[in-house]
Length: 124
Image (cartoon, rainbow, N blue to C red; front, side, top):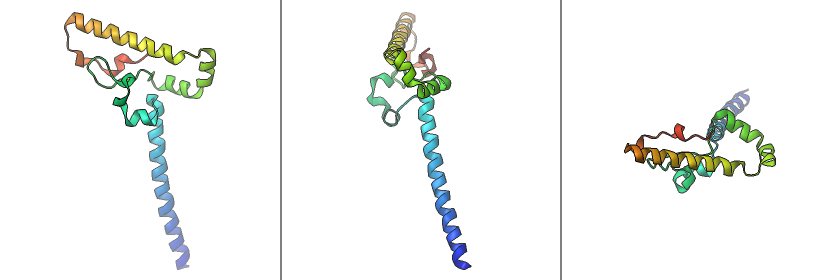
């Protein structure tokens, strides 16, 4: 009977550790879907110019359209690309245009460029 209790304790520890690891991995990937990023973009955001906010030099993601739109993007990407293969290029172009308009408005107002938040740069 002592061996059965020991084996059960080992199983509880093993599967408990596995559950913690799996839950952490799931949470990380849900965060990636929520922000519409790849693992590489999450780990190295300042390597990519499209993840940098032009106004103020902080972080901005041109492809983060909010949770619901990002989930729709994840699940129906093939349908979107079949309908319009340039959907991501158009989204990025709209974002760049918005950034340029914000830079121009900031320059003409003479205001502080660092007060632009990431949510203001979210694509429509």
